[in-house]
Length: 319
Image (cartoon, rainbow, N blue to C red; front, side, top):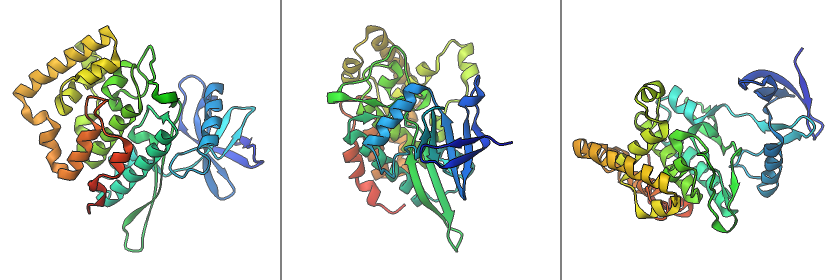
């Protein structure tokens, strides 16, 4: 017999398929659930995240761009979310022909979600394609039309009081989508979200082969960490380490690591100048390349803001 959960609203949710299985505790898995004729997602979470979610839902009540929970069960630590058909990661992977104009629509709404967060001094820290939820439908002609987009997963979101950066003893977020400073765990700010969003934009318009890392075992054989590999790649794509980045990280060990990765990247670029985004990014078009270059500047102090991203000319271009 299927398990049921009663939300704070009094609504009853019937658990269905497991959407994400927890490695050690089945109760912490993420479930699809039904209530009436609607589908939802049930997520059992640790108490600190449950409390953080309540705080976020209060600050961003009514947001359509941020995926806040719509119901909860305090006793069991369960959050109830609207169900989405797919993530941006799965959408691009499963449907390479998904319309460019609709891809741009998705990115626009993600940008607006980030603007909401940053407007109240929150940093997401884990912006990546699988944290972007998407619904779409087909019209009478069979054209795919995006109907709803939301940025989700605020497990490690941080309230940056007075622009204060987040510093942790270890890097947080996904290694493939972190900013250079994010790889160190120090000096993480709103600019770090912009860098991650820039990578998402590049991925959405065809840069997946250059951004995604899947040879973990091969790297391990050579004693190379994923962080080192990603840093080297990104310095070769977007430019060398800068004084602004080193000053923001302000950690001797990590500054030396950044310099080392940057030096390796520069050697690679000498042999393969086409590694630079200024070369391969031309395929995106001049306006897209201009916007995304500003987002992925290795220097966080020179990176563009979300306000400038959203007012960039690229959004006005037909795709």
